[in-house]
Length: 416
Image (cartoon, rainbow, N blue to C red; front, side, top):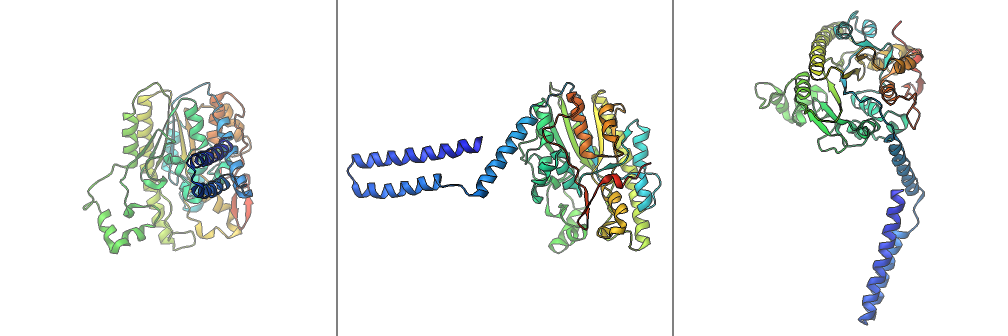
């Protein structure tokens, strides 16, 4: 009810101020000034107390509803509070999808998950893409919250510039929340809604991920191409994985449980000029590039797991792809290719360590044949709270949209 209280407070102050001015003027017998101030006071009172438009009242009611929703989220209480590491990997696609798109039958990254005792979720889909949308969805945990985020602010929950259900739930249970990114894709520092926002690379226009690489290299008459070259760079950032590992190792030991959320690369998305209907030599070259990137991601995964377990043997580690390889982009509006497009863009790798983490909660979600990245987090919250469904709002899957047709993920399973 904060907005109603604010409205009444301003109206009361305006009225009191008006009468105070009038009293002073009357006592000094300055009738003309009294008349002028009376007019000014009336205008002030009118401005503060004038009826609200329907739009203003709707906004007030919407804000009250949101505040009530976040208050309900703070009532979710965990019975268990292990340290949680949610590690997102760019373009981490399952082998069964890679086989259909770029003819990779076995992803080194997926094999590393299997070999390191992770439990891989079958038929996992990201709820949104590309990257900032995927994380906006993940932090929102509900469809209604995600839909209220304006496009330019998608990703701001990651940097703490905007509050989010995910962070609210964990912080209300005593967790310190840290987010780690390789660059400023999710916004500049200064957000108050996470405890720590750690960014590897310095911010420059030349490094901005909002531009394609060929645009960045030619900006300012080619100056970015020179600046980005390692010979001329005055600051050589660590790799994404090294930066994350160093911060895992340097995390201060305190009485608070930790939630750490990181976004890493490689793997890689397909460049915009390489698509399934493009030159096959280009697809072949990208296949080789992706395999190299997936192997690097596999090596990084092993090192990250070792760094976490060295610090905490009881930690829960979630691995989530943000979205797929996205090599089918030019086929997106061709309905006869909808299955491949959905699997390529929304199909992702996801896994949990230890293998038996929240098994009952996850088996319940997987009983319908698939799971989404948002459902993975929601099931974890339910598991920690010991409840079947702790959320004040129901979850609605944002089905993929092709030619204004919303297609349910259950029709696009890729794992047997």
